Image 1 (cartoon, rainbow, N blue to C red):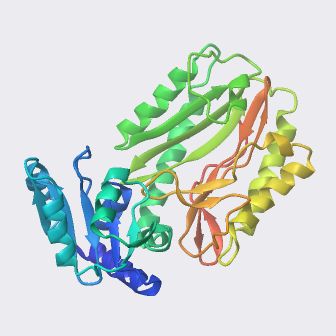
Image 2: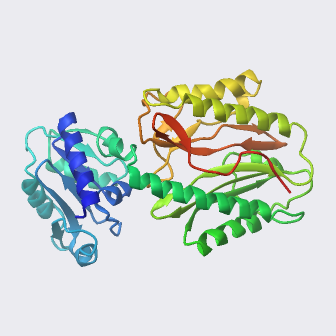
Image 3: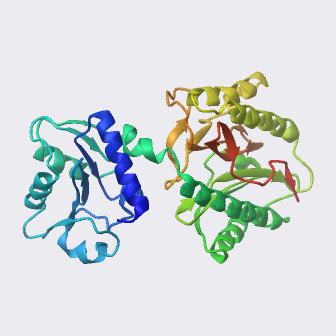
Length: 365
């Protein structure tokens, strides 16, 4: 295991000690990728990474062991289809030294339910919870390497967004603009994480599916896009229009700009995530558009495009150094247009630093 992953494993064991955790069980997921740089083939055959204070090993179908061996030096406990996973799992639990009476275990919340039940059946009486205070806690606090990767991904996304807006012309379809953006990612060594292009009234649907709507003069344009490079994604929303702005556009854009700035200013170590949501929401509500802000203010971003922390009105998460998340207030006017301004920020040196360098000013064509 390389030094970077060894540090993560050591940090996990420190969190396990602090939280009284005997065992962490991870399925084939982004948690496993983050902790062990392993992304095994996923199907109905159980795969589990078990971590205790003294041991880490992997339950793995025998037919996948040789391939997975190229990516990790952790010990495997292989099982064949003819035997089933139970005997190998028992050997792994014994090797990990897990108490058989009422152990405290953490389950990967993203693993298949049958994988989790297989482990729970082997450890009757176990107390269990999900990864929020162990692996999730560590993942939500990005290190210097992750910061550099996220920054590079954000800067590439700036250029992809610029390419998308540069392609705007009367009669072009949403799909054609999305293709320009996807081609840009590919040409620059990235993959497309997602790309939503919304013309006119389609922007009023927060999760519009890009289609064959053609752009006409006077249409508002909303582009929400993200790519992935170096293992980490980007995510950003910018807005504009073709020709002249539709009625009310400038007012809504101004309100959202103030909401973004208020949320960025509020985001500091020690501040509950709900305070950041409130900072953005209060601006929009005071301007009379409260019912038109239809979603949370933000979501975390790391290995996954959506991960902790979540910036919601009910979140009790206290922000900390290294946390990365979106700030993306929106106002959606059905039948007219919808606008959203989105930045990814990292809590760094006591403040929220924006990763993008593309201005939030209107992009007109």
